[in-house]
Image (cartoon, rainbow over all chains, first blue to last red; front, side, top):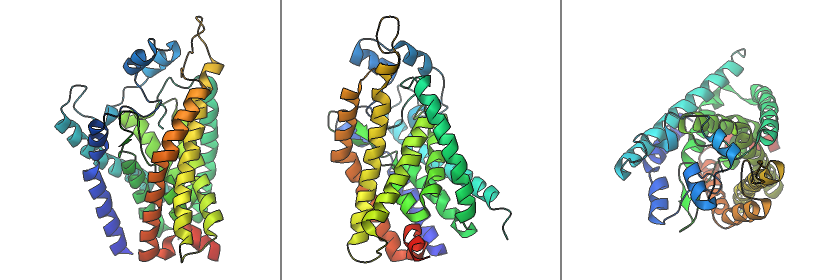
Length: 111
Length: 228
């Protein structure tokens, strides 16, 4: 059981290091955003206008690490790749810890 | 499939927040009853896996990108209600920390990928696999489970996008929120998933089930629930 868990954690860490493939492949094959996930600049180009309500809501939240990128809009590919790996580890850590906390809270009355 | 802020008007995102809140409260009760302490690390790993697999954007050359979600294999291994919690936590982190999916759309995104997808995948796996742990059956069931689960989630997302122009227009008659009608959103999202992203989800689901069947089959919720 413990050995399996160790293997699975190693697998997850490997996935985090491989995650930059998720930006390299789209770049290589000239693919853009996911369908329906365009920012307002892209919508302006696609439609010639930005829907009014959409524009208002789109400014609602400034994420601390937008698009898993720590280097800002003009970041080089190397910075983006590194940001992606760092984001992967933040994801493992934060989601793992929140789930651990929630589960512990839920079943603390047992045993 | 992470709907950003602004694509859904309040008439859409509010009811989906309600649906997700109800789902979460049921899920917490179910998980409290079903989950044992020794399974907690697996739930943490499941969430981490879902987070990571969604980073692997797969391109359609010259077109859009998409990714697997992992909700199907989590539902098979740990049960659909546990999957609801694991995937929802991931989607909330993605929205708040990384701006992947909107804050107002958390309800809809969690409902599509974190509630509907794990349950559809779970039902497909049970229906096709019939609790078999040997032979080709569990593998066929696992592939279809991921394939159908992600496709249904994508269709639901497309419908949410596509009804926006019907629901809300500005003074000039143009759509106020998501601009594309059902006739564009549904075929676009259905086709890209049917022919690429859902196949990826199916393969991921199959390979992981194979790994767990070989290394720790007693852990698998769907096969265990059948016995008990």
